[in-house]
Image (cartoon, rainbow, N blue to C red; front, side, top):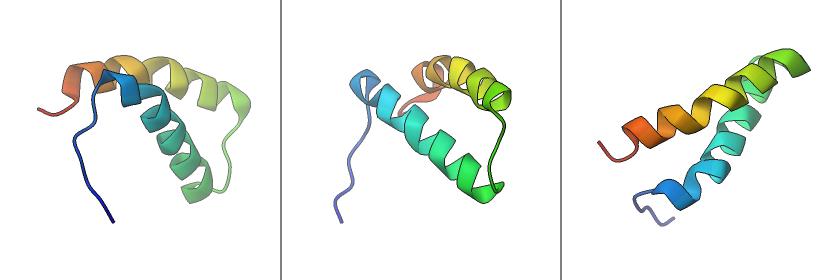
Length: 51
């Protein structure tokens, strides 16, 4: 396994990974909830990535 720091070019992949995790962990989420989360996550990652 290899670890590295993510940067802005990785945000789309991070968002998808988070949505996949939440869907699996909660046994599925409705489309509206996933859309709301997907809209907020990119800004969250931009603000908090590698800090």
